[in-house]
Length: 276
Image 1: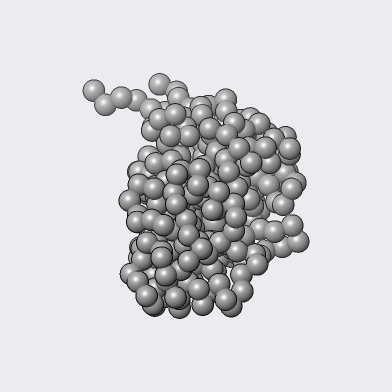
Image 2: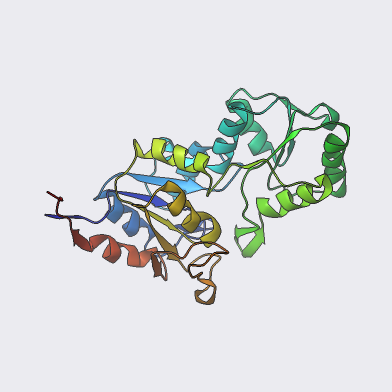
């Protein structure tokens, strides 16, 4: 029986569909082609924006997106903390992340010594005093430690800029320990949120993104029937595409220059015959 190769597509956003406030060439067409085959989800390691804000951002560049189809590292972090970490939470991060935690009913504190959990994330106004305050939380207590996402750099309007991973590493350095949990891609919590955004567990999904360590790594976490496509329009160059091995991120199933090549990949169909 001839069947569509994929029944759901999961898109990263920054570096995959958009760069700054502009759509990457072919993004609108790629999403439209994916929707012809099944549900689509947009999964970003952005820890500050609400799903509705990301949906609006995509809509402004011509990509139709409902908030229910958007997953962000901020929304996943709030769920992870609410479901099993002590409060109150001391945040090394921006106001948007604090808002995502409050959306889930999580109590936060501005007093490091009172923290039951420390959450570290991107902070574009990070100062020495912020790291000193985080150190205080670990000095006087034994708080849980959660990072929103591991991305060390992210696409900015004029090039790459430091991301959450850089801040998480800085806090980990003064704390003398790694995070107990990393909420964003490629975590199992991020995939669970993705499944909810798709409306159910897909049978043959394709994950599309520009970062091997998070986007491509999400595929194996999701299951053996999930394939990955690495785009070279974001933070990864052709010379940095990983190969399968015991160390480092997994190799992608497909490598394309950009999502402009995705409709052709999606149009490729495979024979599937039931085993009788």
